[in-house]
Length: 305
Image (cartoon, rainbow, N blue to C red):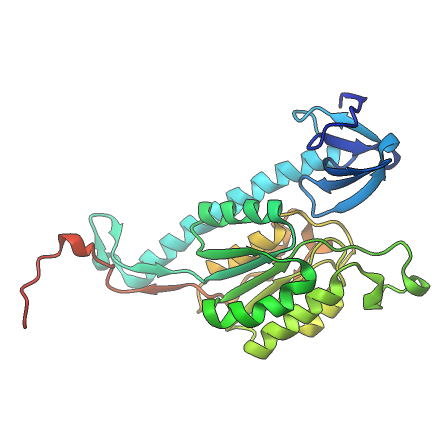
């Protein structure tokens, strides 16, 4: 990995931290006196660092951890894409060949609808792009973690989602009280995620009717599950990839309501693995309908009135 002395005036530069061995690639968000606020390009990590600890990296030669994450992200996308193809084949077998017209499915799809609240605007845009690529219906909103609970009061009854994703930034605090990992006050934003989950569960208590995916890097996994999340981060208090919540939500959206999400498959195919995300058995929210919806502009109808 080639490195060079950083020009401290350039916001948006890609950098690594010398003190951490240059393993994770960041983007400089802003500079405050002798420190920079930096954000992970692949991982949901927001940090500050002395300017003297940063070195610029070539975008084509990121840190080793970042490079591995990108490879794993590509593999995860291939897995979801293949899973989508397998779903079409299962639908074909389920409804019978006679309901196919010239090789095209004669049914219409109703994937689970996603409501995604993200405390990071850049990651939200990445997430929405991936939902679109996978043809998962999703609405996303940039909402700071502390405001997510309040936002859900308005958004849940208006959007009526099948899946809620709550993510952004989190982390174990260096100055945590008594060094206690069980205490919510030891985390940057886990308390806010818990409050948002509780709000969502007040709206819908059935875990199969509303699937909740919540948390960020190093979040209090146990507290998020106890509050009512189906899937959460982070069992091992590790960094999670920016798109891990999206992969889980997409899998929930594209798994039939007749089936439970194969939890080992979905977790093993996330970038962060079972140290980064975990969850409980959950039924999917994907449905098919018959017959296939018609193009009304081509339909010849004789008025009856």
